[in-house]
Length: 256
Image: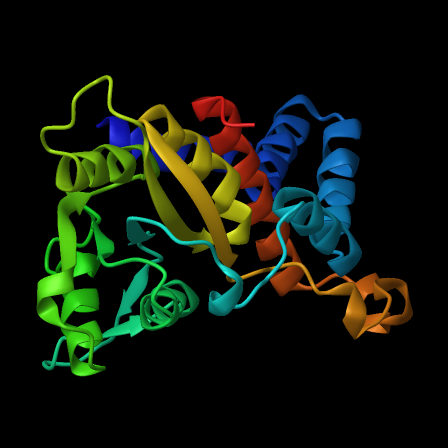
């Protein structure tokens, strides 16, 4: 029930859900201002410039680096990124975000840690889909990573559970006085700050390795010169909504 509420309640605060609430209030009360506010909110959040501004704020100060530039650690921890269950009897789960998985492999091949750990992301809404960690283990082994250096957590449903499960997997009997274990944490750049805080609360020394950047690099050219950024689009509205959802997550977990 708590998991269901954590997924549904934020929808009312995101641009589309909040706009629908305003429209409903305007229609019931026959007021004009809620309708105008809803239209303006949707229009603003549908602009690429607004979406990109939110992403840049969320992803600061992270920058994409190479595996060779990463520091040494005791383990590489790759968080689940979501996979799509494709139609068909073969039950193939397709990638939403391969960057996390591929970055974890790159770090291991670069010799940055002796262990490669995955989290078993799962959703109670998809009971037929196996935890992501199981798929990652198989696919990493197919790409030449030895099975003996890898492990995955049991099924987990959010970042807080991922942090606890990794601690239990990596430090099952660690003394309280022992120094913190250094890990290379691999997740999406916008998700990194919250993830880092949650793993630090479990006693880890976290070395961030952010990937899957949503903000466009300044080296590609100024945003304001791109005419597509000035017109509303469904993609920009989705981007703004996902960015605002991450901000809500930081508020809930007090992970600034």
